[in-house]
Length: 404
Image (cartoon, rainbow, N blue to C red; front, side, top):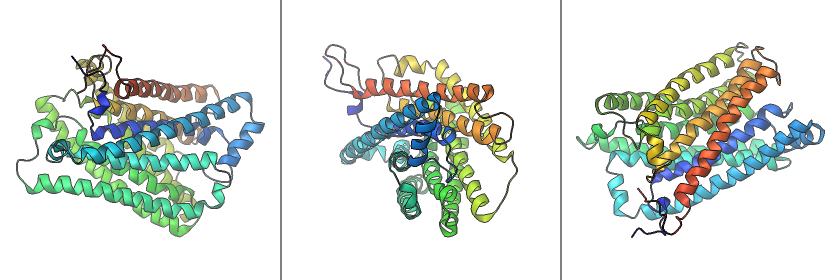
């Protein structure tokens, strides 16, 4: 008789850090409402005072949007932090088991990079919480930027240590990396982690008015972002060769779309860097530069999204791991592309189309495109709730969901 007290999440995998990551990403999607719909003329991001003023004097639709945004930010940021703490505790226990020793001596060692990835997202989510809910934060924000850079540097150090341990093992010892089991984009997880660190490092470049802070932010984010892009390209080429020979591993098929969030994160990093170069170092670009950047990103993302969905449908992934009896922590990787598309679409609309003067803000085209971004967001909210029920809720007696 199956053990009805067991949840799929009780069979731990570091990939459960992606549950925390997804919740943090959804908090960011709600911040997009405030970022682009609430006026904030005195600083590059909306703060508590801007949000309060807009709510008090704004139209009914804007007031409703603000209420939805602050509720979503608070709810998903709390969920992000709760799941991060749960994962850190589970990883601490897991690291003392034989399964952990087996993991760090296999291709799956790179799944441990989900931990610094989730940590970096939580730092970003906490900064958003501060902007939205803490009055007067902007008066001390210049003191916070160096602390944020230190925090991301520490997370980056964790990531580089994990990557170094993995590459040191597989490159110095022959035959320890199973090429036949590399038939997915799972090995792009280190690049995703470094990208998240890089975008966090780029935040002071876009928001600080201290040239030294902006300069340090630029140097750090460019360095880590470049390494992330290089790692992603190499890992993708190696993995694609294996997939052509052996097909895509069914349980890891969602990783085919990991390129989508990597590109969104690196794209936001570049937008932040360009803003810092413009405001602090007077490096001026053309009015259509952001349109070219965001459109190019969306084009590449569309290719990998279509490829991933094609393979998922052909392999009947949803029947196996979303609707059937099987459960895979890797299913949380499906949240990342939808969240990333929602976020980059907001940037494409506001920094690209509106910035280049192609459409009017809050016009018919603007609202239609924004509806697409919101549709991605709503779909990912539903997916997160669905996955959390499958993986974290204890099965009803007599209806146990088998763990992987």
